Length: 274
Length: 312
Image (cartoon, rainbow over all chains, first blue to last red):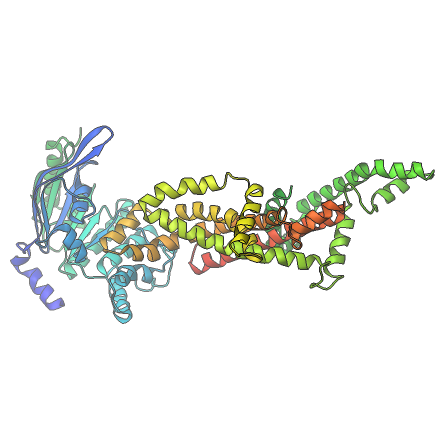
């Protein structure tokens, strides 16, 4: 497992992995009291295996909606979307993805280890394997030693890490993260960004990451999808030229600032600042 | 009067009982003591005032010379006073609980047990029924639309009017004894449980429900792993109300149905024969019983929350 992951990481095949998410002409219109709202319109997007793709844009640009469509939490009204070559519903039934919400949403009556065990219980993993997976995923998010704590005994950042462990526990290849660090302060956020990159490097997961923050998107991603509202659409796709190894201070490098500038230009072109 | 006493009492009783010793130790019991003393003082004043006319009549008929001290002493010791003095009620309670065998028909404990057994049976059935209805309402759209209005309508009918009907109908189909009376308690107690549990089972956050969906969890899994644990605090809160009104239901159920035993029968017999001391001691016993029942449910609530790891 670790050996093959290491090989894949070094090889260029990782950049051009088989498609995990494919969207063609994807549209979603909500009927509201004030008339129809186009949350998504004409989205064409292919996300390959092993990519780290960020979705950035102002509120209402459809980035969260796109993630929810992929997760089969919303049903598109136009176009098609495929996850691992299947419909989102089939993918959900296959438990093909782990979803991390904006809030940790841990169950307050369950200890941290039992929260991580929740999907494993639902999916019918035997007790011994549950224990092993809890140990491994909590180690992955640096929460070893907090197994017996209740959620309220943990800080917000630790709770969000526990919720990431919960999404990782059943080894889905696709991780959908909807502004997971949005509610945290910048210091904690920096730290978690670093850990998330490390985690991504150690696994072969594909990550779709929704964010409001330009530095966060540039720091984490191999590709940045810039989106714009009314109707929600993709206005720019920016390939990152940053190296795989990214210490936190890479954010002062000229290359980093160049990409951040391009993202900002992309947002401006989509009238996102108006 | 009968309806309000048991409900009003538990609030005061439950609040004071648990931490009374600690409060005494910290000297914080003083306000409570002062309030209780004031109530007792006012009660004694009213006892003298309300019983005086009859006592004055007695003095007049027997041509007795009397002083204020005589009047106070005699009004506090009448056999059938308009308002019995607190010590008379306590003495009656002592006499009918400790003084006689608990199996005797003259024992207040015997009557309390009769009412308690139908309260508990009715409460158990009512809670189970309430939970089942709430589960149906939350999971079934048709039930959500159709059952709730009937549940609310059921509570607008005066229980005093419907209690004899329940007993008569159930007798006609061969059900007698404890069950008909218990069903009157059920009729009252299922309501707060339905309302509380519908709210409780719907209390999980949207992202928690979405989360279960991403796991492709079945309805049963979502229920047992998310909805039910979320609803537990709501269940206990509703059960506190339900147990108190179960007791009201049991007492009210005894009034119009010709029951010969139970606190309600005791109240009724007392009012037939002008035994005000007996009425008041039955009332006090009902209030004490309600306080104990509510406190027990509260204890269960705290234990359940502690087991669920809720922040202390």
